[in-house]
Length: 356
Ligand SMILES: Cc1ncc(COP(=O)(O)O)c(C=O)c1O
Image (cartoon, rainbow, N blue to C red; front, side, top):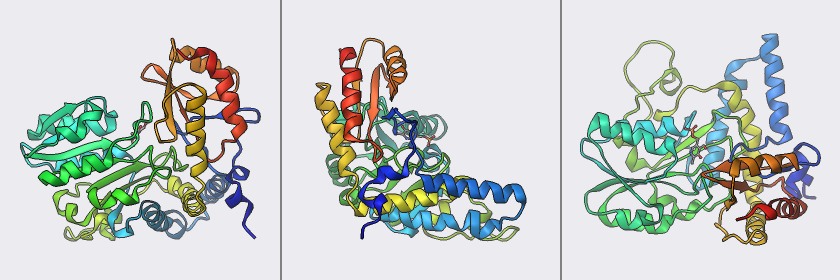
C-alpha cells in the first residue's frame, strides 16, 4: 500500500493554519521529518552526546547521491557547497585572462557578480545581453555562458536546449544556476550539455539554508582551481601535500553541519516525490493560477504578476493570509507540493483585483 506522504505530500507540511503559502521561491517549507531531525540534532548537541562524524558529517554523502539522482548525474560529479556564489566564484577565479562570458544583463547577482569581479581581477570580458538573446549572443571566442534555468525575479525559463546547442557549436562551456528549477524542471535531458550546474537547497529543495550543490562535468573539473581545499575534501586534518580527489568532490567545502542534518530527510523525500511524479501538480497549479490571473504561464512553478505597488500588494495579500513576494516591481508567486487546488482558487480571488 502506498505511504500517505507519497500519495499526498501535503500530510508532511505545517503551514500556518488558514494561510496559503505561495513563496517557495523565497524559502521552501521544511517537511516534518526535516524539522524533527534538526530538533534531535540540536538536543544531542546541547547534551554533548552526538557523535559528530556519522551524525552530522557523513550524512552529507547521502545528500550528494540524492542530488545526483534528482538531476540524473553521479555523486562523483557533485560537490557540496554552502551557496551558489561560492561555487561560481571558483569558476570565475579560474578563468584564463581574456575569457569571454555571456550572461543576461539582469541575471541574479550571485551569478553575475563573481564574473564582474573576474573582469576586474583577471581581465575576463563579460558580455551582458537580454535574457532572451543568450543563445544568439554566443559566438566564436565565447568561453562560458552563464544562466539561471528558471529566473529568480519572474520564473521565466531559459531556452537551455538553444543555449547548449549554440555553446557546443563554438566550444563554449555552459553554467546553469538551477536553484529555482530543481526538483520541478527536467534537468536530465540537458545535463550532457552542461559543464557546471549549481543549486541552493533552501528554496524549492526544502533544505535549510547553507546546503548547496555544484555538479561539475568530468571534462570541466581540470578547468576549475579548488581554492577552498580543506580538511574534509583532503580527508585529513593536518599537514601533507595537496592531494585532493580528482572528481568534483575536490570542490567540497567543509560543512555547516546542522544544515546538512536537516537536508537529508528533505532530499530523501524529494527523490521519492520525483519517482511518484508529484511535481506535475505544482507545475499544473502554477499554470492554472497564471491563467486565472490572465498572465502567460512560464512553464516553471514560479511566475510574477504586474500590479501598481508590489510591496503594498504583497503586504495586503499577507494580511489576507496569502504569502508571496515582491520582486522587480511585480508580485512573485511560486507553488509547491504543499499547495492545494483550494489555495490556488483563494490566491486568484485575493490577487485578481490588484492585477494591472
Ligand atoms: C537564481 C538564484 N540563485 C541563487 C540564489 C541564492 O544565492 P546564494 O546561494 O549565493 O545565497 C538565489 C536566491 O534568491 C537565486 O534566486
